[in-house]
Length: 562
Image (cartoon, rainbow, N blue to C red; front, side):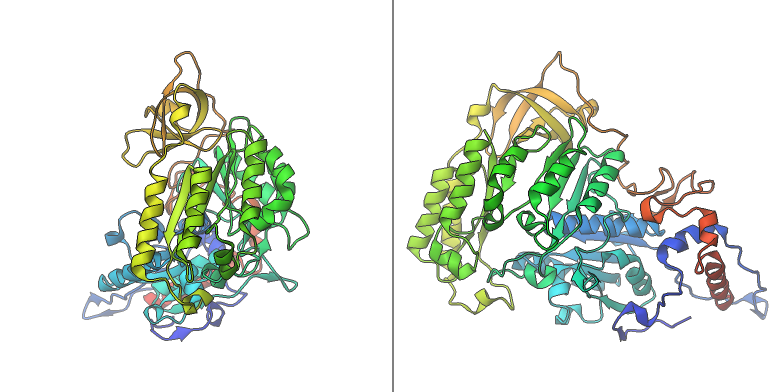
C-alpha cells in the first residue's frame, strides 16, 4: 500500500490502471466480498493497531461559487461521491475533506475561494479544488500541492478524492475528446444530488465561440462543445421521472448551441418541449445577441409555448459600440435592440434580463451615458450590474484602466437608476398561475414563478410545494410580487413521480443510497444504478475487472492492515 506523500502526481493514471476496479464497481462489490481472515500479530499480548485510511468512508463538505453551470457540476460531483460511500455534510467543521468548486468571473469570487482554501488548511482539512479557477490557472501559488478536478473531468471526482484522502496530490485537467472532436464534458447520466429536488439544471454545451477581452471563463471552459440532442432529451426524461417539475438549460452561451455538431438551439428546444409534462416548466439560460439573431422567429414561438417561461437573459454589457468593439463582443448595440424589440413585440409580457459592466477600460463619460439611456429606454426588470475587474491573463487587463473612483461612481449611478423604477406595479390585481419550487431566504414564504419568470411569494403551505397554483396578486416590490391563493382553485401537480428527498442521489434506486448512507433496500437490491450504470450482480460476474479482482484487492488491503 503506497505511503502518503506530498509529491505531485501528474495524472491519476500513474496509480490507477485500466484493469483496476472503478469507484462505481467498488460500491457494488463491497457487500459481496468476504475477506480472508488472518490472525493479528501480537507483541507482549498487545494487539498491534495499524493506521488506515479507507477511501469512501469520509465526510465531505462542498462549496460552489458562480453560475448555474458550475452549480450543476457541483451537483454531479456530490452525487458521485455519495454513491461511492462518502457522506456529504453541511457542517464544514465536521468534514474530513473540503471540495471547493470555484468561479473565475470576478476577483471577489476568487478571493473567497482562496480564503476558503487557507481556512481549510488552517483546520488541517484535506482539500480538493474544482471549477474554472484551477482549470484556467493551475500553477497559482496558492494551489500548489492541491488535487484538482478539471471542468471536463468531474466524472472522475471519486478517483481524485480517493487519492486526496490518502495524501496524494492528483491533477486532472485534460479535455474530453472523441475521434479528435472535443466533447461537451462528462456524461449527463451521472449520479447527482440536486440542491433543489424540484429543479434539474442541464448543461447543453460548454465553452463558447467568442473571445471577449475581459473574460477569464474562456480560459477554463474553452471553445464551444455541445452535447448531442438525444443525450439531452434522455436526461430531461430521467429528470421528470424523478419528480422534477422545472428544467433550467445552462451554458456559457445557449444561443450558440449545436453550431459545432450541425444543429441549433430551436431544434433542441422543440425536442425538449415534447418531453415536458403539463404544468412543468422550462427556463432558457443566457444567450449572447449574435447567435440568437438568426433564430428570432422560432425563438418567439418557443417562448410563447405554455410550458416555457417567457424569459431570456441577453447580456448587453455596454450600449456603446466603441466599448463593445474593445470588448470584442461581435455585435453592435443595434443588434441587441433588434433582439429585444422583436421579442417584446412577438412575446407579450416577456422578461428580458441583461448585464452591464461599468468602467471597462477606455469607457468614456459619453459611452457610459449611452448605457444609462439604454436602461432608461427598456427599464429592464432584471439588471446585473458589475463593476469592471481586470482578470489576470486577459487582454483587458493590459488596457488603460478607468480610475477606481470613476468605476465606483458609475456603478453607483447605474444602480440608483435601476432602483428608481418599479416594473411590477401594474401587475397588482392580476390572477396568475404560478409554479412553486423554492423557499424564500427568510423562510417566511414559498417562492413561485409565473409565466414570465417573475418571482411570486405565496403562503408557506406544504401542499403548495412543487405545485402549479392560481393566485391573485395583491402586492408588488422591486424584485417580487405577492400572491394570495384563489380559494376555489385546486393545486395542480406537474410531477409525474414523487420528487427525491433532499440529499437523495439522482439515478439511484430509491432508498439505496442517500447522502452516502445505505438504505434498507440496499442489501436486497439487484440493481445498483440506472442507465449505463445498470449492473446486476450476475452482470458484474461477466466483467473481467469485477468481483474477483475487487475481492483480491480488498483481501490484499486487509492483509497489509493486520
